[in-house]
Structures are given as structure tokens and as C-alpha cells.
Length: 114
Image (cartoon, rainbow, N blue to C red):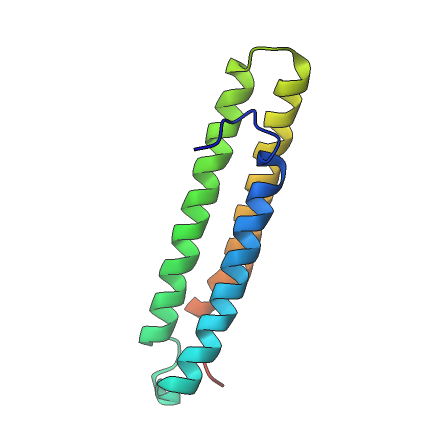
């Protein structure tokens, strides 16, 4: 596991978000092509439930990394550069978590494959 002060933390949140984004819409496309749910069911389908679980799991992972980096900022030895890296990284992770929720939560309302 990467240290909160590792420079890769600056892009890790956005990398996780982009992998989730591709998995979300790729999974939606494959699910609609292979076994499309009944449109009359509305938003309460197995496909939306699976996409919601993926969204929540990714958001929890990003929030975990946010808190880990935030705590690492107060514990970072080695000066202000490491502290700055952890603060910026925690902001990036938090932004990615917010973007994940903003893009993923409409599966609660909208039916898939329409």
C-alpha cells in the first residue's frame, strides 16, 4: 500500500475514478446488450443495483484514501513539501469521490437501457 506522502497519491484518486467510470459505462453497455432488464421495472433492476454497489464501493475507497492522506498530513515528517503533497492528495481523492457520487447516483432514479 502506498504511503500517504508518496507523490503518486496526487493522481491515484483520478486514476481510480477513471477506471470506475469506464467500468460503470462498460458494464452498463454489456449488461444492456447481453441481458437487458425489463423497461417496465423502472430503476429497480439488477443492473442498476450492481452499478450502485460499484459506485458505493468506489466512493468508500476514495473516502478512505482521503482520510488516510488527511491524517498523513498531520503525521508527515520531513517538512512542508510532504505535508503539502498529502493535503493536495486528500483534496484530489475527495474530488474524485464527489465526482463518483455525482455521476453514479442517477442509477437510483433512471432506468437502464432506455
